[in-house]
Image (tube, rainbow over all chains, first blue to last red):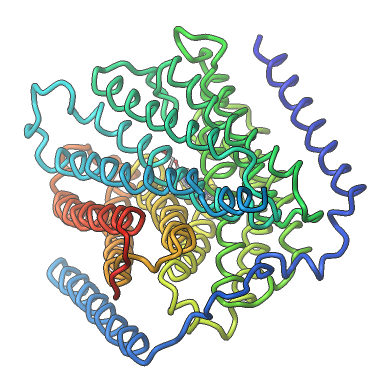
Length: 86
Length: 456
Ligand code: HEM
């Protein structure tokens, strides 16, 4: 008879989740949501913004080309395999 | 006093310890993966070497990936950003470092015991009882440290990442204990069908209540910061959080659709697997709208690039997963390499990518210096990406061959030669990923320990 374990677990889990949810509701965790959006940015002072360099863009293009060639090669080998089978 | 606080705030010993842990165990975990892949091509290669037969290599690989590489990587950045989001230092760096040490001791014990054949033989729950206790303890310690930090916070509102990280730690401590049937030390199992149900309730929670929330927490922090844009909607993020808690806990039985478990439970699992689209899209819409028009900034930060790619993989793995939970689809995809492909998109492409991204985003903040080599990190990014996408392609093809063959009543030994070439390709890709882990470990160690950064 395993159900008592399961039911006890479900009941405890549900109770804790609900308690936490209502704590959050009462504690104002669902208010002031506009300010909350900015929380990760708060201590941003002094950090240089990431720069988008020309080299970076070139690198992206080159890598993109490489990946395209790789994908094209995979597609070609798949087509070739299909052709051989057919 | 102020100087003290500043020092503690800027020391981040715990975050560093977890980043290092992750980089180290990624090497070991991917080595075991490569070894397993090689054994699938050449089964006699390690014949008679008891410690590294396939049956021991596989559980070592997956346990190390989950608990050695991905989880510590995600916790590494969490130990950095949780104090920052709460405006207060971590409750105890000492406790944090002790947790990291205990974590590593448990991982060493994991490798040793599995190599000696000491296993409880249930997937994701192989570890023997004393190690189970250690795993529960380290999650509980991490939770305690985070909760005490929350209690001392100066910021009233808990940002969504805090919710996710706290939930991941405590829910894993509980479901791990439950799923490993910790109250039965000898077997670590119930019997019969209830055991299978319990095991997969736990098994899916490892992805749904550990890797997913930790990864979401990291992405919700890194993407706004890297793009220097506020989160698109905090309300939506909370909606995503609560719906994840409600929905993800019910999907475990989709691993058992072809097993005689009660039909009502299968129906619940299938319906909720499809309903997973709600938390998944709530998260993705939020992250992608935050990053909208700022892909240049994301590309410029290698950590953010890893994280953003991880969110794209999350889209693929989740949509695929919802389909895989449909019985008609699963008649072909179950019990073959299709699932292995899915697992690698999820654990490596989504959670692993975000773990690496978190590490690379966080390390310069921990040390106050740029990464030792941005180039190496970038190189690792492409190696992991190509390896992971390659895995997906070859394993999916192999899975479809196997699935269709078995559906048509073909015998196994006739199918094996057909998938051999895919296994060979897979081992090649595994080598790529293992090599990338070596580069990563070198880069992370040099970045954390060396006095100066060397760019690029
Ligand atoms: C909406 C989200 C998802 C759904 C509905 C889903 C669904 C599924 C289903 C139905 C299976 C079982 C396939 C079978 O045995 O035939 C499965 C397996 C698996 N999933 Fe997912 N998945 C989701 C997301 C994820 C994520 C995010 C991860 C990783 C972080 C993940 C990792 C895995 C792994 C590792 C397995 C293999 C389990 C095994 O060893 O058999 N999944 N998933």
